[in-house]
Length: 393
Image (cartoon, rainbow, N blue to C red; front, side, top):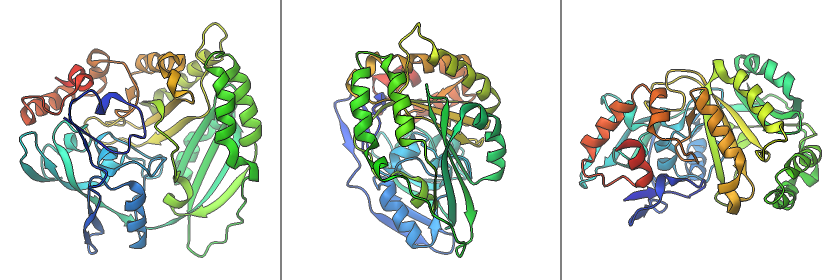
């Protein structure tokens, strides 16, 4: 038996069972604690509904993922994250929750419980989230600049940006020599920002991308040409805006379920890994040509057992195909996974990967502790499917 939310990413974590539970309609706000700046909500609430509610209260969550259409319960359980700034997964802002156990019993758990570092990112294996209480922060404004910067330049500057800015995201454009760099800094409410909008035709990027990438399904080498055309058309200008973290940096729509992978590596190994990744993707003796964009984000070290940033500052790199029907023969997925595994990489739990416990266990110090907790919480394996049984039984 598995729970699922809005299915924004295609993954095996919520598949292959006879019983699937949708949490989409379990989406109410339960309580607001003004004194402690905390909100309690049902786990099926979308980030869009949650963030609108807390911004109306003058609050924020200071680290948000790229999209707002995911359900909170699914985002927390899988370690979904933002970038830079506070630099943590959403689960780090959960201070208490109610969970439904495999036997149907309900339990309230808070940060004082020894299981909490495991429960924060537990993949639905230690119980299903019923309600979640989040610690919020005061709302703030950002000035956000976006522009293309050559790869060698942003690679030499990103560490300084992480010290200077409150939001850093690099949308790498493989095969073009550029990254689309997004930098945000906190400003006062009365600051004046000379806003600069993108060209009018940028709104057609998805349609043009779809047309160009259709050919790459059968001619992977055309990806290089497609990416360069897309960079010149849609990633060659500069914009400047202001807004909240949610308003200025989060995508408000997602057309469909995506086929994508994401891997994290310790920041100290990222630059070496990136040079090797760029080298392999540019070679002509394979078909591992990657579509735009490859999303690069930055996480601070945390203590959540199965977090991508457990114990070390990390850099995450996403890899997407724009031809989902041909995802199983998109060679960039295999290239990215094999490379990250060589550098002790960790996958995003809600996205595509093939590695098993032999490859992954060495990179999470509490892997065996998590398995033991799972067995104690669900001895009959009711929350397992074939994918999770392979990893955690």
